[in-house]
Length: 216
Figure 1 (cartoon, rainbow, N blue to C red):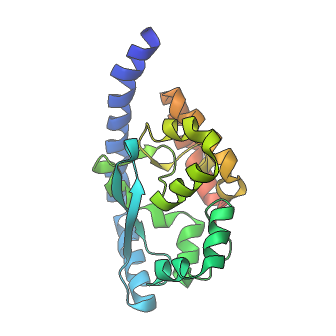
Figure 2: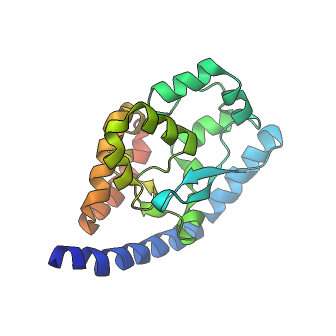
């Protein structure tokens, strides 16, 4: 009972306070970088610097996740009109290596996770947390639940918390880790409700980003 009360009354508000502090500081200090990246993305092909798409958040609630656009303008149309490309995406870690849709500036920002900087706005809005599981696309989650009904409990646990910009999967290798392993890692994180684990992930994130480990 003590553990349940602690998680309920202390973990959630403390985590939210940390999210707000980190997001405000990040957006302030990274503002010059945000402007520079916006200009370079716009100059490459004239398209919008920000890309938003539907992801599933806490308790499957859909929201628009924000990212710096790292792909060509019609990337989604190309993906869903190319069965081979779509199957390659769904059969692995849901990340394509050498994705032909990625732009030149996109390769750079994805390598160092700079495409995810706009997600600090999602965190401020309460749609995401700084630390949490990856936010899943509705189509990839439906397919995975259909193909692997044995992980129903793990997915339920993952969706019981807000998705994060960084998380246990990201600091453990990202695309080097299989989709099955990622499900287990993220379910494990969701069950723990541990500020200590959050701080470990926060401290490890900059080193993992600089190493560009598992980035595609």
